[in-house]
Amino acid sequence: MKRILVTGGTGFIGSHTCVELLQQGYKVVVVDNLCNSSPEVVNRIHAITNQSIEFHKVDLLDYDSLSQVFKQHKIDAVIHFAGLKAVGESTKVPLNYYHNNLTGTLTLLRVMQEYSVFNMVFSSSATVYGDKNPIPFVETFPLSSTSPYGRTKVMIEQFLQDAHASDSRWNVSLLRYFNPVGAHPSGFIGEDPNGVPNNLMPFISQVAVGRREKLQIFGDDYPTPDGTCIRDYIHVVDLSLGHIKALEKLIASTKPTVEAYNLGAGNGCSVLDVVRAFEKSSGKKINYDIAPRRDGDIAAFYADTKKSYQELDWRVERSLDDMCRDTWNWQSKNPNGY
Ligand SMILES: NC(=O)c1ccc[n+]([C@@H]2O[C@H](COP(=O)([O-])OP(=O)(O)OC[C@H]3O[C@@H](n4cnc5c(N)ncnc54)[C@H](O)[C@@H]3O)[C@@H](O)[C@H]2O)c1
Image (tube, rainbow, N blue to C red; front, side, top):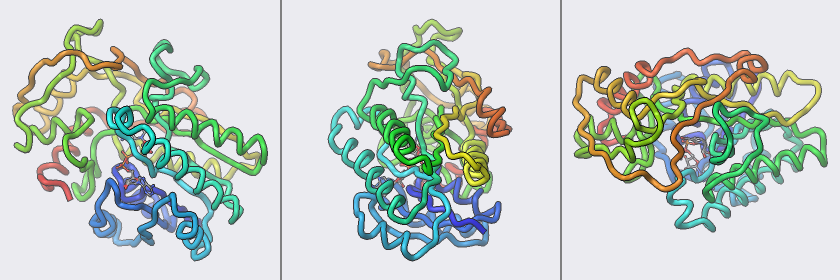
């Protein structure tokens, strides 16, 4: 039985991936410093799966503590989620983002090398496509980014390419996520942002549950059918299953490589599409205002998913209605989060 180290495993996407890993028979070790997640997640994962993860409260910046985790468990592969992820915040405290995301990843890579663990699935993002590429985004497009957060993703992808170029044992899947939303259908785990949500779906669900008065929609004069921005929403369970497919491919491969894959639905929904779908799923009215456009937002983007469909044998199976239903189930059962 393979043992997978999941960094950031108590976070939103990490916790859902831990559930799928356990349910598919993997052993799971989690390191997380809990800077953006709750220790309660460990109990919730157990409640869903009736199995336990090995949890270590460790900061990726702490080489010695991380090294102890590798010493204690024989790790076969790493899924690396841990990082700071708020685009807006990253423009205010860029050095924190570079330190945490870049130094944290370098420390992890050095420890992996020390213990001869070379399989890694890395959480990248559609933000690496920047604002100049045509849509849909294809993995071969040139990379750039418009924020310090996005630049950490571009740089980490480059670290991993360089590591492989210097030592061909590095075997890496760069998963570029589009817009992950939704929650586990049990309602035990879901997205629980600190403070004001940065993303649309948690904002809508907090309006629905009465924690916030109204949604602000940034711009209704974009060149899209209803004037609001279009994004490619993907259910977090479909996203987690994409990680398992990528992991299986890494573990089975005889020739290590570094490959990028888009994980998105391959089509776009507008902000107003999401609002209407959420109203239908929850039976709640979502009050909203139209606010000015936000700096840096582009009108529309979505993924070209041919490569991940073909090479990972992976498909999204959950619709926008499923995403809204599961988000509402989680939010209504946990109105104040964990
Ligand atoms: N959610 C999205 O919309 C989205 C989109 C694209 C990419 N991503 C990437 O996916 C990954 C997971 O995102 P998420 O939405 O689950 O975020 P999250 O904040 O819920 O999870 C990240 C976890 O990493 C932990 N962490 C952060 N820095 C750490 C450190 N130095 N040491 C140990 N733990 C640390 C946090 O406590 C948190 O539990 C991130 O790398 C993010 O950039 C997320």
